[in-house]
Length: 136
Image 1 (tube, rainbow, N blue to C red):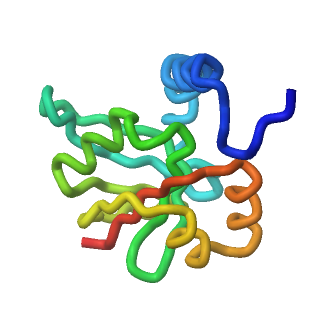
Image 2 (cartoon, rainbow, N blue to C red):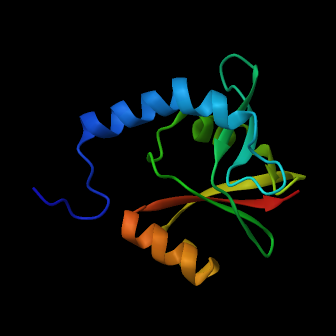
């Protein structure tokens, strides 16, 4: 059965997200944000607990901030935390930046801001939403 881009079956998406959360993310967190690392790290404050968290993400630097693809949709905890507080810290390529003004944008808005290679990759995967944050 062939799936259209961006139409992952919910049980499969949930299983991938859970395995990443408990298996891959702890390993990636050790390297995320460092120079020459694929993954960036977004540091955010829990909206209910007030606890500090760090989540590995893909983050592309754009003129006034970062674009972060929302591969698992808009209901993930880290995104809800960033939207609730209106701020976070992004570490990417060995540099750390405070960011603000989080905004969920669609692919039509985000993709033109990215490099052609990244744009093609995200189009193929079918990512529909992105987080745009601005440098504080």
